[in-house]
Image (cartoon, rainbow, N blue to C red):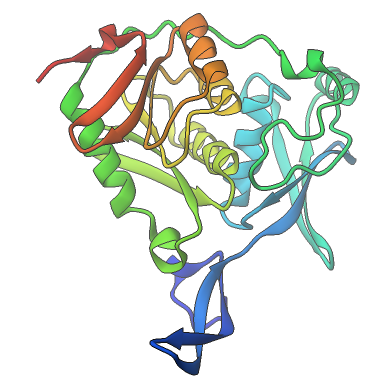
Length: 270
């Protein structure tokens, strides 16, 4: 994105193209979401390299560190530097020696693409990290799910401009906090990081533009988010995990239509 572009379109680049319309061919341009290699480094040691959109990077670094179990609390973590290199970016973070030693024991060995939340895990044991049980017994009106999804769509600025971006939002008290990224799990990490910075809340709903997958539910459980709603389908692993950890999982949430797969007691009929 050039300096002349509005701030709302950060994370996008203007590219040249040729457009064919009714057989006529003409030059044009498009706004395309940025995707870069971003290395997440702790105490000078790279843990993972992810393909992500280079926006809200402090939120991303904080959220990734929490949802991946690198640290248990944000006050045990520091962002030291954001470094730009020819091949990508490095988020350099500082953690305690104890957490650093634990992190090195399960460091990811390959890059994760923008669609992957578990890429690079070296064993099944790494994937099967215990998930935190969510015990918040908040109650929300079913109508709130509809309102949250509508708010999420309205706040997807990057996606409105490019058509290629996922979003994660947290809706509570009639307002929504949204983060976007080319990768659905990156968007959730950014959101969790932003939520932690803003202060704790436990009575809202997490809304996602993607399907409900295992890694997204695992991250939601780690962040202690009790209600998760997605616009698309769940996987069997996501349903099993949501049921086991106490998350209310709602999928195919479109208008007033939705499927409740687990722990529906938190949703009150209108």
